[in-house]
Image (cartoon, rainbow, N blue to C red; front, side, top):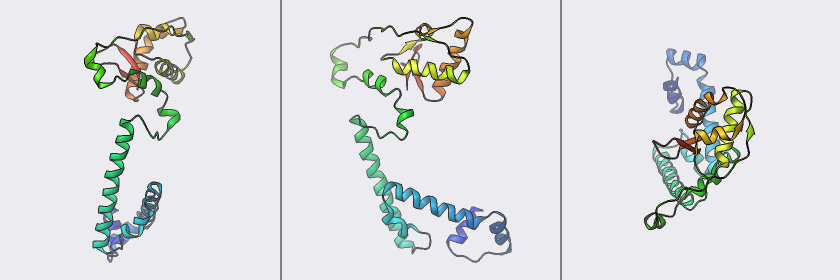
Length: 200
């Protein structure tokens, strides 16, 4: 399909086999969707000025120059965003989801010069109110993630257990939930071999 798509973009004549692929594979629709997506991405970046030059029917030299300009802009934007993040400014794509653990992360930052002056001292434990252990795995995963996000320091398995009030064998499920949160990028170990976790 994509071989035929490239021929369509170059306005090459199609043989009988390619015509069948074009018809049965709806390659003209695919071409249209790619063009709409490309235009939407350029609009999202505010770079609509490159749209005409990047079109596949444009002369090769003009298109190559536009591609080079596009790459230069992307590299410059990447450097700008990296500098912003180094200064603590993060442009969240999904703030409601991504910022849940941001406060906990900020409190763990240590200035580089301070690392050499004195050894790090663990933050004192703060008593968190016990909450009922939810029913249903999705609610349990959410509850553990919220406890980690609310803590200003990493929590051990015992401390996580102490955050909930419940009866039964619900504690058996906690390690699996923590593994799930790690796999989803919602939790991480405070150190590679440590048995304590914090919001990611």
